[in-house]
Length: 235
Image 1 (spheres, one colour):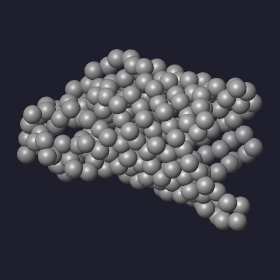
Image 2 (cartoon, rainbow, N blue to C red):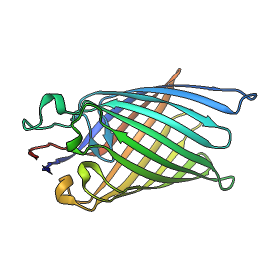
Image 3 (cartoon, one colour):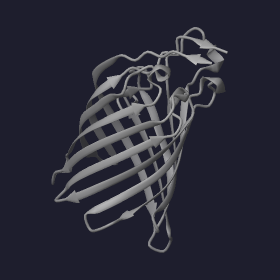
Image 4 (tube, rainbow, N blue to C red):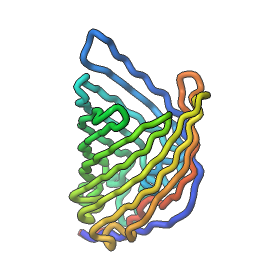
């Protein structure tokens, strides 16, 4: 099968409304959580997976007091498959399944090691959307400021485009009035650029967040790359 994809770059302003529920007990070793988010776009590493359309996404998580956790996540997607992809073979949803371990290396330094599998139920298997990814995330916190370093590796990326690496640096700060600001810059590389349809690229963004009652609201200004347009599928 040969997939040809096209990506267009631009900047975008996105907003998010998140509701989160966590339940923990000092008498029990597990903590349960759930969240749901309404967003004006679903952008991951500078790529829109909904063609700049609204998205609803959320999931459940269970964490043990040792730091071991499992999570699920789901969201609607619109990958702009071309006319050569039958409507019944197209992707409308992405599901994520995570397992990981997190903890503290010191009073200021924490880590989160994670393995994840992303599935696109309903999409034809020969489109090769599904992928596995491994992530290591380290955060240094000092005086309400967090400095983050993330590395993600996929042995077989989207569209079977080979090995992929993502490197990200983040900084965020929380003020006394609960207003949060942050910024991020990252580099995404893929072994087979021709198959995935883009060259290695830098993605970055800025955000503001503020809690309103039981909800968290966020506004993002970020670089955005349109979701892949599958122009040709040859079996």
